[in-house]
Image 1: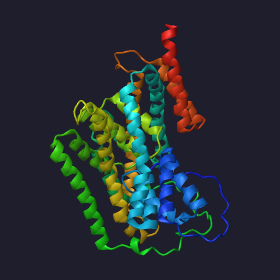
Image 2: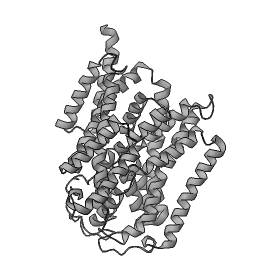
Image 3: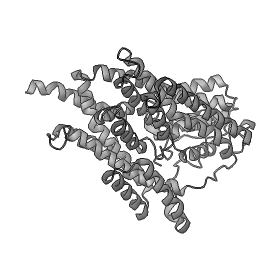
Image 4: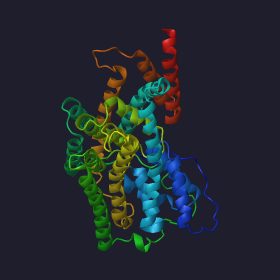
Length: 460
């Protein structure tokens, strides 16, 4: 995984002031605020939570925070959203987990629905088209940077390099489905660890591990609260509720849309995607591309790049790009008829978000009690290490796919877009050499694209 705890600003231990219990209302206000400020991808979002919850508010200790993070990193799905769900559940039972996880996602959903409507309604306006013209090369570089960032942590030996190379060849040359690559890598890690455990040992670490910020409400030695203790009854109850919600939602779609209806197919497809998001959002994007663009044709490859650009500029998990996919697919397929395009898009975006994030809530609420009983003794990391190595090759293939669409917008038989290439090179230098943040990078590239688009007709 690419998400180790980033270095946060150094802070001296807080004074030993008595800590007051946190009410559900106070926690709700914080989770709502977090949903609107959670920019920067998983690393940035986890850093924000660490600063606020561990250092400043002292709701949870460093050790317990990292323990929860380690569990979330082993799961498919967005680890930052799952971490918020875990801490919310630990503090205020099931309702706390649901509120924390939902508020991490809902602001992004509302923002993306609005931006998706603007994109489809006004995307051909020169000013809007110019902004996206400049952003697309930057998005290509961001995907390449993600491959580099994950690879620098995951590819610790020649065996991991070999897995990454094999994954790249499998998806690039043979168009192997992403789930098959994940399964193969997991099996390699599982069996390979038996004869060479050191090869698959996870590397890296958490930069601030072991640092103390003073006593916390949920401290290192705080007993596990009664609701967080493992019981078979609780496990069965959560699994039954989660499966029941999924069956209810899928049943409504089948009854109203039919088995082959667009919304039904979206529900089934994004349920599978939710279970395959090992390695973060960038890892699952190739699978979403294969299904949404090539198989179901809910949107085009160029629109997929635009959606990723919008996802990068909004708060919340990057995997929320699926809401854009849903909105565009619902709009273009006219799932509610030609006179209700916005409602069709909004409904599809909401449905896609529900099916994508439902498994994450089930994982946390069902698995949390078992993890609370193990404090730091998480095993079975070898398959995850191998999957993460394979993810590097898959993301590199995605970067090449984006580069092809950006630099040769009409295919290799068309013209080479030299201006897009220059923007991409400048973005790469800014990102790799000068460590420019995502938002300033996208803003600068958008400004360049807008300027170029408005000036070209004048110069001609």
